Length: 550
Image 1 (cartoon, rainbow, N blue to C red):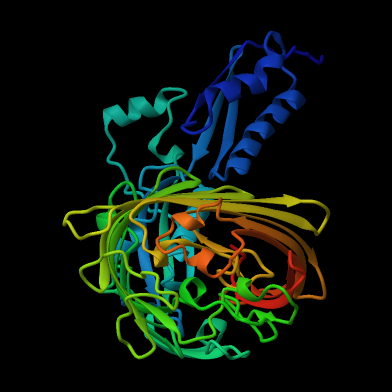
Image 2: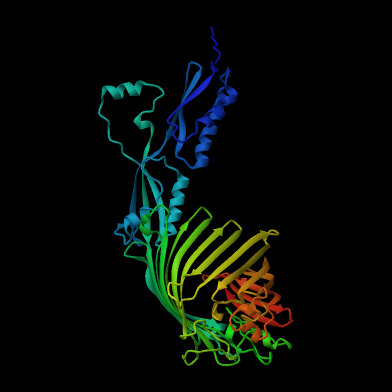
């Protein structure tokens, strides 16, 4: 005799050990089977869906047992919990544990996985990325190992809890120990280099000048992940000495606030604003951030923004401190204070009272330099294909002879994919200055990172300005990329409001456009750009730049 019994009806599901698995998800997985005779195939698919949720979320967990108690299914889940998290420094040559230079608490404050949490592989990978981004390690990995649990002494309470169903026993939650293995890299040393820059050339030369640099940097000062850098850059006209100290996470505060303290003494050419207008355009001009070579043309003599006379140098002594912190996933904010003292000198080092046209160069009348104390605010938004930067500087006249002005700058960029490989990059930037305005602080328009086809500062010098650019990027022979571009810039008729009207004295138009084509090559220091552009006077020139346009 064969006795056939009908499977019980499924009226409900209870789960034990599901700390991470949402109860609503469990109800939804079995909702279609409630009130029906238990179908093992459908029941198994529902269990598989729960296990799939653990896998998709990266959680070490699974359904380990299912049992029917009357018309109710009792499920048991096991979710691995973290017992402890440790740090181990490894020798880069032998792979054996060694003594590290970095303080363990500086590393571990970046780890979000804590003892008692359910082990999540995705969270562990995110922690690995954050620790690696500190820039101190060549290799970072997490090794999970089963934790040894101490045997519990038998007692009446433990016996009764073990017999209760579906209560989870201590052993139903497996424990894992996590070990963060790191291999430290060399974090300090000297570096030196050299190159060419059009800003370093003499005013009447067609060739870019040479620049040399050397620096000492330590990226793990006192084992605290603090960075100290001292650098010197020397060229034929420009020069820079800078000391910079940065702490990427001040005191381990909950907002991840960083701090940067800097002091720099810099010397820059002021010829883009104060240089003499050329009397003829048959020579080669110099484009600002790279070698911009004017290839001839007529009728644009006074518009190139180059100097044919002695050079004018702007010397700045700058010191300040800035604090930054993330405001959201894509938004960060910076606030700081900066002191600046500026002198304008000739090539012989003597202070200048005016430019070639007799116009004043510094704003202060009773001394040969300007001083200012600035409050700085800056916010940066970085989206998937867009960026927005807004910055404001407010001068603080704590003394009567300090400059008093407000400067606001905005830059926006958007990247659009047009085809499988091609993309369009649209960018715009602008600014406004209200209050005291020495000419060297005005906005200079035209050049390699402004409106291409013009020399540096050749369009104008204004209290207000706006520049827009559109670029079409497309692949060429690897690793080269091609680009077509068009730029437009204007001083918004603000040139005459700048002290001495330096643009008007030199016959600059105040607005203009340029268009052209170029090639780009990615490098460790950023994209290398070689471009050829025509301006609206049909005069063409080459531009060489490092970094993105703008």
